Structures are given as C-alpha cells and as structure tokens.
Length: 105
Image (cartoon, rainbow, N blue to C red; front, top):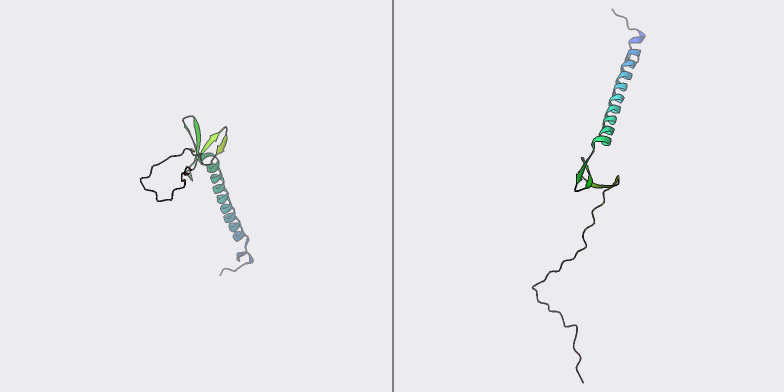
C-alpha cells in the first residue's frame, strides 16, 4: 500500500503552483484583452471622411459624426437657418374689430 505523506494534501506545493499558474494565466489574458481594447480605442474607433473640404470624424461604434476644425473636434449640433416662412390660411376670422374709425364732428 501507498503511504500518505504530508506533501500529498490539499495544501501541497504542487497544488499551490498550479493555482498560481492559473491565476497568472487569467490575469495575463485579462491584461491582453484590455490592451487590445485600448489599441482599438486609439487606432480603429474613428473614421475620418473629407466632404467638400470639410473633415468629419465618424465614430464607428455610435455612428456620431463630428466636424474637425483645426485639429479640434466639434460634436455640437449644427446651427440651423433662422429663415421664416409665411403661409396663408383660408380660414375666416371671427374676432372683433380692433380699430374703429373716429367720427368727424
């Protein structure tokens, strides 16, 4: 029969070495995934497009387009035109007359 020695238990040095190896591998994989995410964030997230002399930065994740002016990114909404339009309504007004002419005396 095989005798059980003190080194064959749960806390033996071989069990500890396997645990440290698994932990090191897990931390290494998480670190590599974080590094890859950082590289994608820095180099591959944005696409730059030139349209009629205007440079646009397009976020590949959110599809947000931002204008680039002198190396500064402007993601604010564009200013809309302040023009006004007038339409004619065919309805008849029933309001009281506001101006009444003075009678000559």
